[in-house]
Image (cartoon, rainbow, N blue to C red; front, side, top):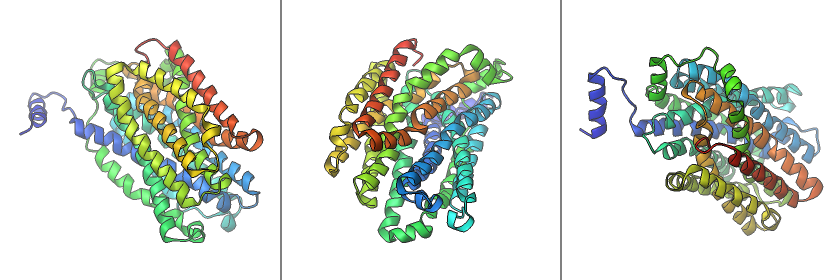
Length: 433
């Protein structure tokens, strides 16, 4: 019998709350976010590769791409609403049940996208239905991320919150790898015409399998110790969002912009870069996806490095150093983002390494300022507000800047985001980021 099994049985025999094993906690948080981000990135990839032609065919190529990116942004405006609704129930009835509901909301919206008729079939109703499903994706992810981070950090032993909080963040590179990889595989076995005809639907419908796996894992876990204590001590509040905005406004504002550079960097290095490589540099779809797959691997490698570094040097210190590095990196944008695949690969490698170092810690950092009774709502709203300011329009803004002012201005945009983030980290109290 292992020590963890013995502890499990001892707790049960004494009538104490049964704690989740570390493996179960980390698997549940990672599997759920992987599924959620897979769904999210499948849309981001399709927004570049297929949606302009299928849902916005009457526009010129640049206008169609911008319209596609506009629907992409809808999810980020839906996420705070999802954060409020799911956060309310997460802080009132528990993390577990709320996470299951968020997963189903996101998953069903994604599967329905794969079944939608195109503009050619039903006209203007097609992009409207696409926008509605995109709203559903954002609404579900708005409730998913905060709960997954809390599932990990609220089960973490003392001194291990940065390490545990890193695991749900691995869902982002895993989801990016799976979504890009699936599109890459499809293009190996079917011509682009077939992909545009029906092949693009496969990744969306295939997410149904992942949803079933995610539900099975999530339903096997118990509630977090922190939330169990909140119930026992009668600490829950009737409407968490009201207390949040009454007592924690400063934490919300600072946290939103602490995460700004993280979001801008990521969506410049993924959705925008994929579009730039295909539309401007004229890199073949498969090569552009291969670059993105490589970026997801680098991203995933540096997330645990961030967790280990934070345990040794401090989370705040690592975030400051990484944000300074992002500001410096922004000046390399016009040097690396040229019609040269080797340089673009260098851009992706450096950018996604920095992304791993900041994203690996941002979950724990955004949850830290809030007490248990409003932590689900607070961390979710903060993360998703950051998504609005830093991610929702990033591909659109970067595309517009590059088309109207040149690629150097994309770097200036990233640098401005890094400086704002740096100021907000310094403005935050030690231990609150």
